[in-house]
Image 1 (tube, rainbow, N blue to C red):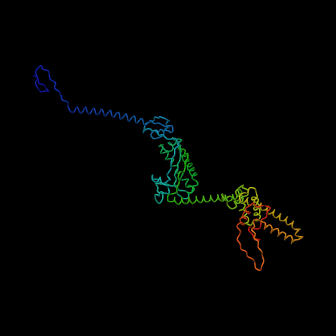
Image 2 (cartoon, one colour):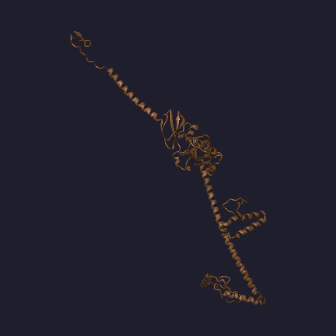
Length: 451
């Protein structure tokens, strides 16, 4: 008999050996599971690495729009321009393509403006409260003018990046849009500070706003040109200006007073021109000057001919220059008697001429009548007087506009007669007076007179 080593059991001779079944060990199953897990992890890691490689390579792909310019950066340094459309370059962080907008853009500079909260932006400046006793640094700013005044200013500019590569090489390696805007803001603030120091606060607030903005733009552009920045400033405007909030109510009141005074002056000038035009027509400046123009004593407009003659005449009389006064009086008469004079002066002169003609005619008529009666008076004076008085009494008594009362006189004492006017006679007299007067008819000396 042969003993089986594995079963330790004897087996018969000539009998085939039996193979015993071996149970799997726990260590083998753990090894296989670990191998599978490692294999799966390797595959996942491979996929992730591939994804990261693709993402890394994709950072070198950039699309440049038609209104943009791309700048290629290699290790942070500009090395060239990227063409419009899809561009491939070294991936980040080795390389990078930055785009700059070349369209006209606007920028608001509020470094010298008030600190605005969202609530205060909706309020009027007069209704806002100041933050403290003065301007609080870090929260609000103001321009210091040449007369040591403070003024809050907000500016708006438009600009164009014409040469981005110059900006990248000469100004900053970071050519992002924020850096461009910060550069422009910096040069504008510097120019505004310099120009404000050359002006008064009132001029900057009212009379020289446009000139100030133009000079700020020119000075800022000079600085950008010196830097060779490749940026062109189009316009600079002062969109808002205001005094510090503590001084704003007083300034507003003063401005209101100035505006009301100017309106009063304009109304006075208009009324003066109307009065003078009604008095002498459009020729009045030659007589008294133009109230709409401020003329100093003795200052006359150039190439205007006779001007302000009456005031010149008064000054010559006051100075005792009789010759000059006489010459000016002659000029005044020539102006008044010319065909260009109008208004009340023309009417008065016309009436005076008419009265002069009427007086001359009456005087001539009386002189003619006197010459006619003179021979008769010399022959029989008393008879002529009695006849003329009789004719006068007849004319008076025959006049329909005279109320007549007949009475007798006599006795030692005067007769006093108190009567009321006859209403019928008074009405008739009124109707007669309302009729057109006959040029050849002479009425009685007075209405309702009693001879």
